Image (cartoon, rainbow, N blue to C red; front, side, top):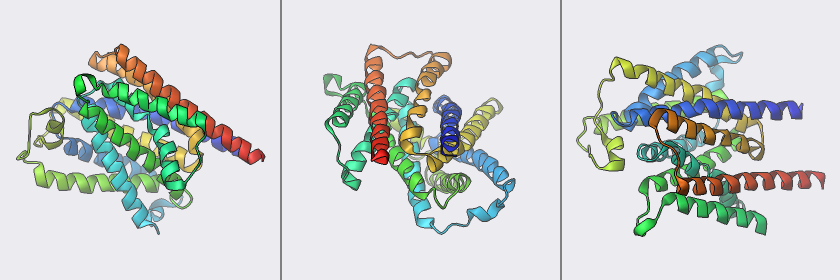
Length: 311
């Protein structure tokens, strides 16, 4: 039973990550012509329609949306919202593979969070992996000539929020289903995006300067040829998000996290095929350091748990 559950969680993680990659490439594609909050709103409506359809087909139906943990859902919505906004604003001006690589620092961040908030002891090998991973982040930040790439800093903030959100999912998984968790996140996206649209959707804060152009651009009615892209991002976040949430809800994070790294080669492929970008030598160094140290941290966590269980 335990092996079957673990295998199911792994398959959900791999499938969800592959589907989620469509969300990244779609939003980067749309970032040149739309405001981020407009993209998120349309995406959330599409994803919500899918989630409500799935919920209506389950045995418990809409009754499972009744929760005794509204504050925890609100906290998770805030975390996921910050993670999404910082990631996609950074992604708009970074090569896709570079942004994904920086985002994959999350296992290292989970280790640091466990030290700060859980008081866990970290051995020298894990400390070495953390340091190597952070060196990889510095490489991706490209602080040449004293200038740090702001977009990469935003993606780094997103990784911190993503790691926190996954820890929270694991904490809530005993009482909340994957569909319930996904529903409240999309509901939060709709409320916040509508609020942003009412506030800045007319473009009065619009700017042509780099990062902020994507955040404060005025809303426009999408032409017909862009609707398939909106549909793709909505379905990918609805399906992929539910699959990844189910993986973290039912299976140990240390077992699931390594399989999310399948998104790295896919990001490189998407970047080459759709945007004509390919990681340069500096990016490859950063990718190797971050992914290698992250995978090592996860492997050490798995070994430590097995040793603890055996003891």
